[in-house]
Length: 348
Image 1 (cartoon, helix red, strand yellow):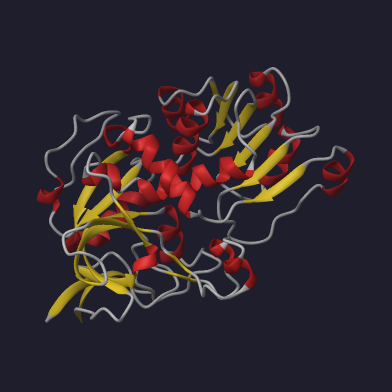
Image 2: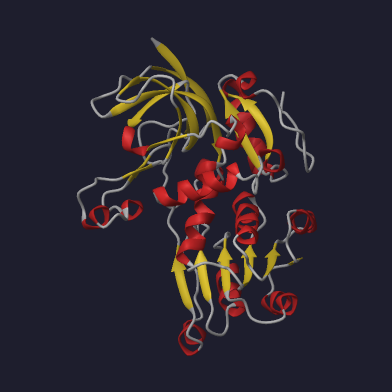
């Protein structure tokens, strides 16, 4: 039996045909219900992702229903897409996101979730709580990234926070940091529209990516800076915002090397912390936050495209006007629609 699947190649985003995979022992066959288009997908599409090469099968932000294999049929699941070896020293220390032989479903793997079906190790599946609809469930994976970053920063309660970037991850970080008791949060963005959006989502201030303006808006240096852009201009700015004694967490995936002001880093005792994906406890925290309504699909999911029109979904995500773009084999399965918010729309 054949199925549809999306492939991203140098020629563009295409929907192709493939055989439905069969689950091996320890795997489950999952029918895709919804998959998100990540910023990393857009970067990889244009050859700007340092770890994803073309062609590749996209779809690491994916939820669906088990139909066969080593889990009960009918179970609603979401994927934790890192595929560890389980035997290296990082895996044995419960840091499987840092596996020394890591593969990544939907990025560096022969399958992705932008397909009618996929197979995956059952250890990479999390049960979706019954109180989360599919649109909300689609936010579990992206929200887990900020939850992991905050964990690595040793929390934000009572601390001043700067967030560089007002895209999906930056806005999710904003909501998560607010829920976890940050003292004051300033978001930076290049465009006026994105700064206005950050204010609507609860920032205390939103300014261009300028260290002096951020420090003025915070009233002091930033205790924690989350760089969700990781561009050549944002990394030194983030370090200047954290001067002195602050922590910079690099959340965005840099396209290449950047310059680091090492004298300031050393003399001001600034910590720079990389943040790589997530762990199961971050998925649990994300589901709890979604269940509490702190993060809502009505605010974040702004476009849904059918699988057959994946190319338009990628183009929609690239333009930057949307927050989270979803792809669904059958968009009607995501009904009922949430009340639209922040200019949300449903793509034809």
